[in-house]
Amino acid sequence: MVRILLSTRLGEQRLTQADFARMAGIRPNIIRELYHEVATCVSLDHLDLICEALDCELADLIVLTPNRAE
Image 1 (cartoon, rainbow, N blue to C red):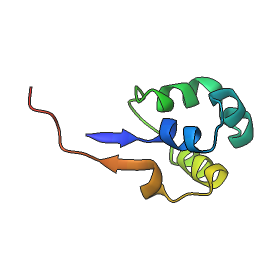
Image 2: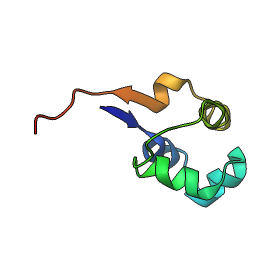
Image 3: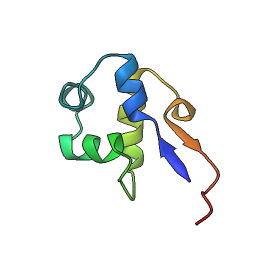
Image 4: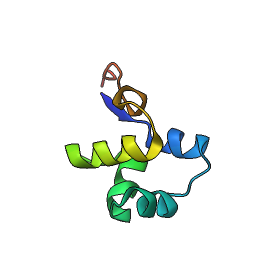
């Protein structure tokens, strides 16, 4: 399972979703979907903008965890 740690990164920097959306130049609904980990696809351009705005590497933002057995 791919996890997007945007909520963790924004919390560490004490940024709201709205503030971050303005800072990164990404529509708020895209940030909301990534923040709540409900996005089904992510643009590489958006990932680039997010990493640049947070001054982080992609590995700091996205992690792969084992799938849960259902």
